[in-house]
Length: 185
Image 1 (cartoon, rainbow, N blue to C red):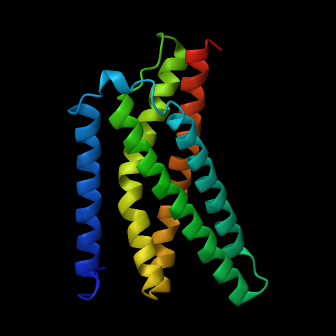
Image 2: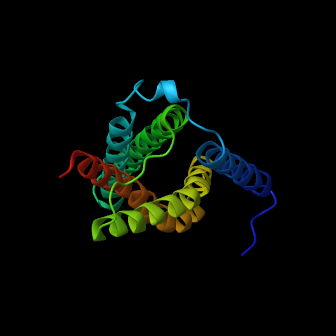
């Protein structure tokens, strides 16, 4: 099914913004070196990132619960929208915090070479790859909702929700696994 011509510019803009954000993050991670002097500053950022991911996942689940409930039709839609906007806010704050953390501290490496490290790397890889997909999906889903194209919103949200939720939850898991390994747990 092709997008109506009225949605093509918006979808193109969303894809362009998503590609630019992804390219910037790849540049930040793989090209831009972190300053050595900044390693002690804002050391709380990884924990904040995990908290924001966890709050986003919670808001996503609340929003899902609201939209699936059958009571109070207008109320459930307003509550769903509020929860999803909250999830978007937490994810946006996460992205800002994540960029600041990478700019200041660079990449974190999992210590050791155990089976747990392999599990960590599998989860991290799936988290990163799906986060690249999640960004444009989230923006497109919001576009369809906010522009009143609810049937299309529902179709896209069926894919967006599980991917966004997975990325949010695995963000917390990755942080917890890395923190535990660094603490020697």
